[in-house]
Length: 399
Length: 139
Ligand SMILES: [Zn+2]
Image (cartoon, rainbow over the protein chains, first blue to last red):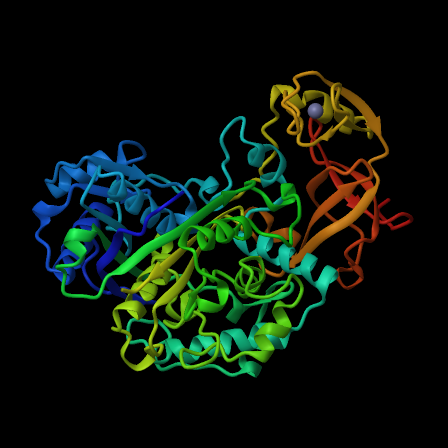
């Protein structure tokens, strides 16, 4: 059942993640094309080999997104998908690409997540105050418009903070453990020239003394918005075997959705990444102990903690202790977010989770330079959308 | 730029809930088939999709399931409420709802603490169900 593992990531492109973007601003579709070109160049494939795309939202169109992109690229495709899983998009995009390839629908599929600013609209009208409602729908009939927005339950920060607060009440809370996680990731980011926090490590004290944003989450436990973007090429076995880089085979995945608003989670401390990961490991036929590196979606520290537990790397409630007892650096005994994660790279909108996918492939290809995990063959990647409401997991493996 | 506070866009299925709040009572739906309590109001039970739900008056009392103290406004509309005491409240019937806590010092918030309804008549037409502790200055 599931993937046979005959589709692989064969190339990728990743823009530097920068706090202040000063180059020319371009539309999302332009960025899509640029990332596609760079990723195909990396795989040494020409654009006429592409016959599938997987995208997420673009700023220039609300509907018909894949067709808009395909038209711009000038590439007719047999397979086009728009994924709507927020931060879980990249993982969701990659497994859909692999599935389409294994079904024989497509041979080469591009997945891209542009995350640079677009040109400002000279014809822009007055600011719509509803834009502050962000991912909470303000539309007529939306449960959020009726039961969430009037109370100000809007920002992602607060949802994650409420998860952390509940966790603290049920299992206890060690702020120093989560601070240690940040320190490890920032150490890796310090070695990653594409990271916004390149050469900028922090100490436990820095984390614990950073400003409280939404109790118990502090500033350095929360991703910083940046400009960036990434693109990935997924190809079938025949093509993958001829590409210059050692392929990162997509051997397992899982996806699980439970709700939109954490208020309606059955159990706030058990996240959907649990069932998603179970399925991914089962499909790949490998165990947790065989994993060489974990690239875990890290919008907040609490997300990583819950993922380590729910994906089965330790028992529920032991995550804080697990972090204290392990070295999470790229050269440690349990490498986590070897690129620095999004806490170290910055979060370039939808591209945030793509950094985890790309780093997984990069490690397997042996292209991680100063932060290369030794003999890295099996990587676990997770994606998280909404407020741990929709999550996906991926297993990438080397030859 | 002025940010008027967003009021609930009341849906047809929830009208009895909103009307009852104006009279300082809490109504919840219960599934006729499986007895499951339902919130937010809707036309189908989320346990068995049964479409026969009955409104029942409940105490509105519950416990604090989780909360956060938002130190910066979640949107400019709520700047005057900082620190916002956002909460997930679990009513005795088991349903959870999003709300805010009033009349409680942020340092006194504790997961599991008992809460009682506080009916906030924000306009002549809209009452929001917030929560407080018994005998607080707001209850
Ligand atoms: Zn029912």
